[in-house]
Length: 76
Image 1 (tube, rainbow, N blue to C red):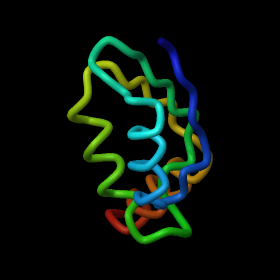
Image 2: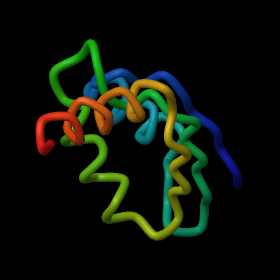
Image 3: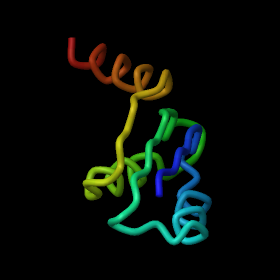
Image 4: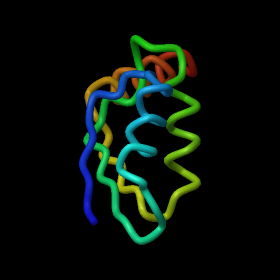
């Protein structure tokens, strides 16, 4: 099965609940259409989870771009 999520914004409890609700397995594919970080506390933890899953395709959203821009500006 193919699933799509977006605008998770650090809400790991809701992210985990949705994966459980759909019985997400290695036979499925999940597309995440950005905005995992910002607002909620657990954006980094969600990104780490995404990186462990070969069947999740992450497309960077504007909130990830903003985060990367801030990080890049701190390095210069």
